Length: 326
Image (cartoon, rainbow, N blue to C red; front, side, top):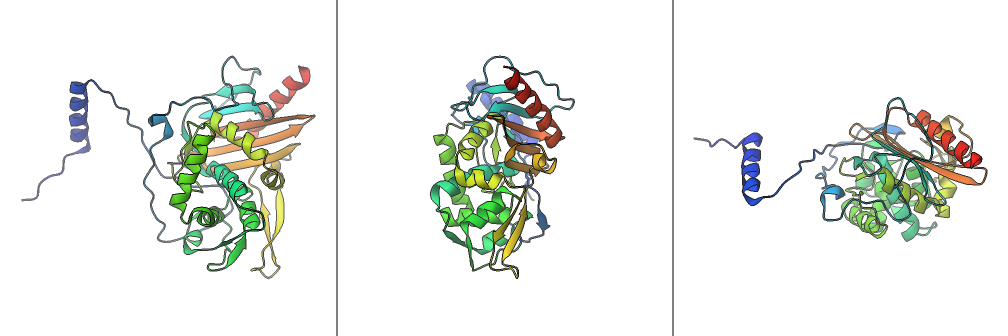
């Protein structure tokens, strides 16, 4: 006779009883799957499954504001968003001063905002004239892709970096991860190590590209990461483009036309110079936008927003008005 497996409810009851006896407490946090940015969508079979990672908020490191980002005190500007995002932040990129915040330390899945760390490690570890051998792992992912990476050939690191930052290409991110760490899983360890060095206590990564909900962060950490990233000239020079024509010798025209997913650029918002979008069902629409005007550079972080472009503009307009008046 086949033995019946205990139900989830029964197992939970046993755990609760055991913990009650020992005087302990537990928190159960649901996990899910996700996906990244928005360019060409292609189907791929046999995509490897990665176990959901334990969010940083559950670990021994307390969730606190990262260095250079102060979330204490009242908002410096008054902004009302009709449908609030899950979390948001308006900040001065040069000083780290926070002008407005909403749940700044709430840990959330971040979709392709994951690629901000991929870009940072790329410019810190690889010279612009380096190349990456395209392995099979880089050409079998779904979601946003360049879709033209030639397996077994070498592609410029700079071209792959354009692919990561503008159309949010998953295959480009994996190709960069392969180049730096051998596998995407090993590269995630480098990402987490760099996050700890930067004091990003909300942040944890399980991949270079963001399809999994195990890639998590908070608005405060993403603001701090954006400040570091925009100080890298190679990143800043790419992120300011609405579109770019990059060398790619494997196409007939020898160039690859890439378009940014940045909603502020698509809306023609003056002064936009970056930075990154992301979307999955668990994460919702996410955005980190950077704008420079009149000697000031402001950044906005939106997590699970119903209107990233509109809400970013509302926050940024209020921020620039306050700086001009002050």
